[in-house]
Image 1 (spheres, rainbow, N blue to C red):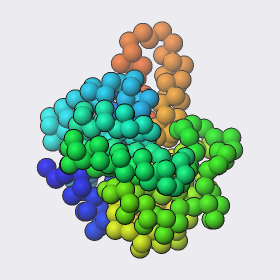
Image 2 (cartoon, one colour):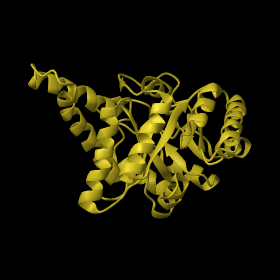
Image 3 (cartoon, rainbow, N blue to C red):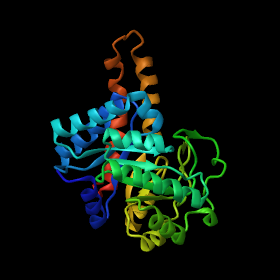
Image 4 (cartoon, one colour):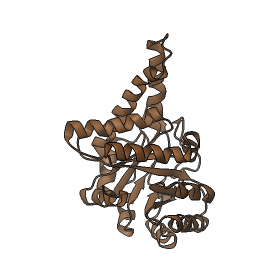
Length: 295
């Protein structure tokens, strides 16, 4: 099986993007794997996928459990599924994920001043590469808000205005100083999504400018709520990985509410979760098809 970096190179060559889906429990994981299997069966396409777990999500599941689950699914089903330690904000947690043998780790210093972000990200790279040189390390520059939640307004301090977005020259300085393998810029994207309207437009021109300035894979965080046409344009401009989380959480919540409402006397958890899995899987399937020009 190809490595994650080889799949990234393939995405760059074909102008597609790898879907990155965050999970916090087994139901979510089963749902996104079902999406990959559906596409494989219906379209004869074996798509790579990244499973993301934030600090809170992997603490809930268990760090070693995360790794074991992904490795078991990958080996038993022979699917290109990879594990990312998403939004890791301390060097201690970076080391923990590296020792557990994650496929990729992002050190998130996006709330720090540029030089402090560079300093800590560089140290994170050193920690990871010393423990395992094959682990891909991602750095982030530009604040796009906090959690995966339903938004009522633009988060305070989030980079939305053109003048606040990640600048190409800063991106180049950042990657040259830190030695990261992947880079996540602020290009109009937001963590979280609005309930009844799309998120702000991505700045496609800025994506292209950053891509021209650096040679690394580009990662789009905060993909939930983004318009389909913006995804297509962003991938064409150079985005190689797209993160989806809030959409999955929202589907989990709504699916569970519907399942309880339609099955008021059901006590078996796995039966109540069937509708939840179905709803999450459909979102992941649609996103994977869009990111890979299969729609």
